[in-house]
Length: 423
Image (cartoon, rainbow, N blue to C red):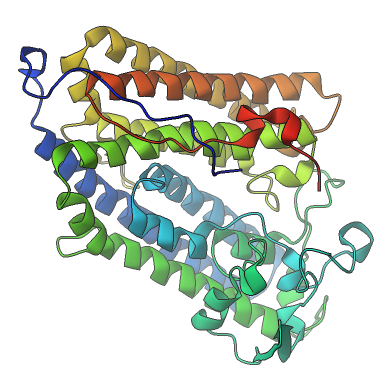
C-alpha cells in the first residue's frame, strides 16, 4: 500500500529571489533540523530509560501496582517517541533503523501465548503465527531450526520480519506493549489487554513460563533503550544520519524534511493508521492496540509534525528548543501559503485533540470508534483524516513555493479505497 505516491511537487521560486530576503539561510534550517532530531530522539531515549526502571521494578516485584506503574511509564515514554516519527520517510538511516523499534502490526503469537478462540492456531501467510518463543527452546524458520533458548537483543532483532513476514515482530514498542498488557480482545472495560501481573510471578505463575516471560520483557526493554541511544548518536556531531543529511545540497536536504512531514501526514497517519481501520471496521487496526492508547499515538504524531515544521520542541523537563525552520522559509517565500499551512495544521491538531479527548474521557475508546455503526466515533476519525490530508496538501504548496521536488508516500486506503480488502 505504501508504494503509491501523491506525486512529485515542482515549484517556481528560486532561493535567490527577493521574496526570500528575510528568510533564514537554508543551511541554518537544515543544521537546526539535525540538532532537533538529536534532542528529540535523546528525549525519547531518556523517557524510555524511565520506563525501563519501572519495568525492572515490576519484574522484581510483580503486583497490580508495579504493573500499572510500568504501563503508565510505557505510555509516558510513547509520547516522546511519537513526536520523532516526522523524521521518518526522508532519512534512510532512520527508515533502516525504525523496523526494530516500531514495527506494526505484529502477530503476537510469535512471542507468547494467545487466546486461540479469537486468534486462531494457524495462518496461511505466517508459519510463525503461534511459534511462542517464550514457551520454546527452538523454532523453525523456513528450513532452519533456530535456537531461542537464550533471549538476546540479536535474537529479538532477528525475529523481526522472520521468514519474510512483516507481522513477525520480536522487538520494539509493541512487543513490550503486548508483554505488559496482553491481547486486547475488545470485550473488557476498559477495552485493553487484560494480562494479569501473575504472568510474571514465579511463585504464583499464570500463563506458564513466568521467568522466561520476565526475561523476554527485560531484554526487549534493554534492546529498545539501546536502539534509541543508537539513533540519538546517529544525529550527533559525528553521526551517520546527520552526515547523510548535511552532505546534501540545500534543496535536496530541505526536500528530506518536507518528505517526512508530508508522508507522515498523508500516507502513514491519515491513510495506513486511520482510514484503513475505518474502511475495514477492524479493531485490530489500532496502532497501539494492546493498550488502546492509539488516540495518543496519533495526536503526538501530529505534535511531532508541527515540531519539525516550526523548528521547536518541548523537552521532558519542560524546557524549549527553538531555531530556524522550514516554516520560516515558506513564510518568506509566500506569506499566503504560510498562513494556509498554519491554518490547516491548527485544524489537524484540533481534530486529533477532539479525538484524543473523547477517548481519554472514556466516552468512546479508539477501538470502539472503528466498530461498524459507531457513527460518532467514525466521524471523529474521518474528520482527523480529512484534516491531515488537507495539511499534507498545504505542505505540498509550501514545497512548491520553495522550488523543491519530493515524493510523498501514499496509501491505498486514500488513493484507491475500493482496492482495500479485509484479510
